[in-house]
Amino acid sequence: MVWAKSLSLAGAVLGITACFLALSPFLLVLPVATLAAGYVYFRRLRIHPSAEEYYELQNVRFGSLGEESQLALFDSNTSMLPEPEALLNQEN
Image (tube, rainbow, N blue to C red; front, top):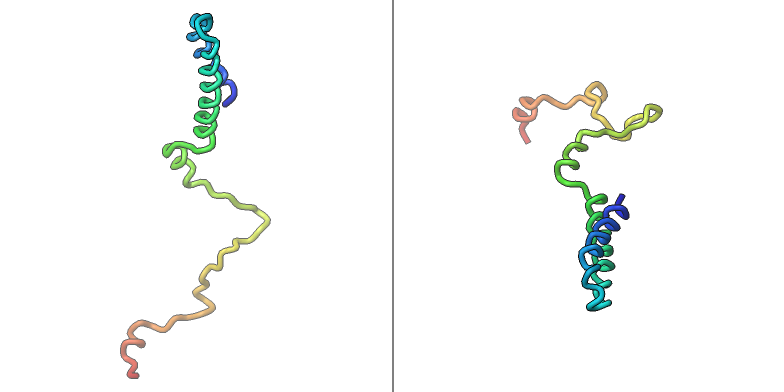
């Protein structure tokens, strides 16, 4: 799609400058430069999404059903923390 957009842009520039090619053949540089600039511009748009497209993907979660979570979760049954009042009442 990037090539199609940049080729159509270069074709439009070539169509505009075609009537002036008889005056100077160096005007063929304009469609070539437009093709290169259009390719870079449209490729960057494809690779880097807009903020709206990026934030639409923020809640996507990837995972595998066969694997367990690799995050170590706190299990409250295995290690009990002392009560906060007991820590405050202890003397050093």
